[in-house]
Length: 294
Image (cartoon, rainbow, N blue to C red; front, side):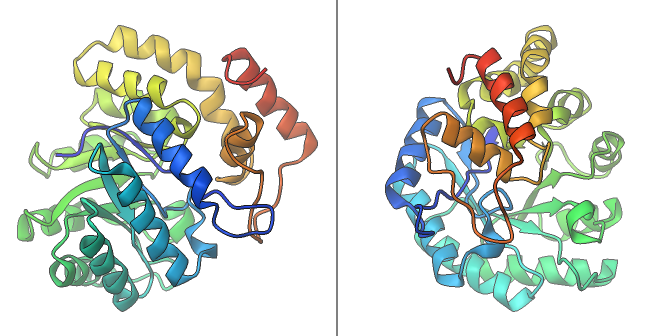
C-alpha cells in the first residue's frame, strides 16, 4: 500500500533549457532529508508534456538512481496513446521504479470501456503496479468509480491505487465503498489532503512538498495516526501556500517558489511562462511568512 506523502517532483531546467541533472539530484536529496514516502517524477508538475520521450525516460531513471531505494518512486508514464504508455511503463520497471502513475487518456476522451481496456493493457504488458490518475479538469474524461472498482477486482496485484484529483471529497467515500482497504487512495490536491484523509484517503501526491517536504509529510503521517488535531494545525498553517501554488497554472508557481529559495533556476519550457509580477509577489509574501525564503 502507498501511504503518506509522495512529491510530484519538478523537472529543473538550466537557463539554456536543458534538464538540470545536478539540481535534480539536489532536489531528490532535499526530499529524502524531509522524510517523504516517495517521489513522482514526470507528472504534470514535472512538465512531462514538454519533455522528449528520451528525456522523460532519462529523468525517471535519474530519480530512481538518486533515490537509491531510500524512498519509493512512482514513475509518471501515462499517455493518451496506450502503446506509448506501455513502452514508458516497461522502461520504468526496467530501471527500478516501484509503480507507475497512469493519467486518463487526454483529448481523445475514451468511453469507460476504453478506459478499462487502456489501463488493463498497460498493467498487463508492463507488469508494474499502477496508480490511476483521475483529473477530468485536465483530461476531459472522468474514470467512473465502477471502472476503478472493476480494474481493482480484475487486477488486484497490478491496479493498486488512485490519485484522486477531481476536487470532490465525496469521490473518496464513493470509491472507498467499492474497493478494499489495501487499495491506496491519494489526494491529488494539497488543500484537500486533510479532508480526503478524514474519509478514507491515505496520503497525497503533493505539489507543495517540493518546497516543504517535512511539513507535508508530517501532516499526512499525523492523519494516518488519527491525530487530526495536529494534522489540522499543519493544514491551517500551510493552506495559504496550498492556494498560492495554484494562483497560476501548475507547475509555474512551485518552480518560482523553488527558485526564490535558491534551489533551481526559474526556467520553463513553452507554453509555460513566468508568473506575473503581482502573483509572484503574493507567493513570495506567503513563503516569507512560512520562513521558507527571506
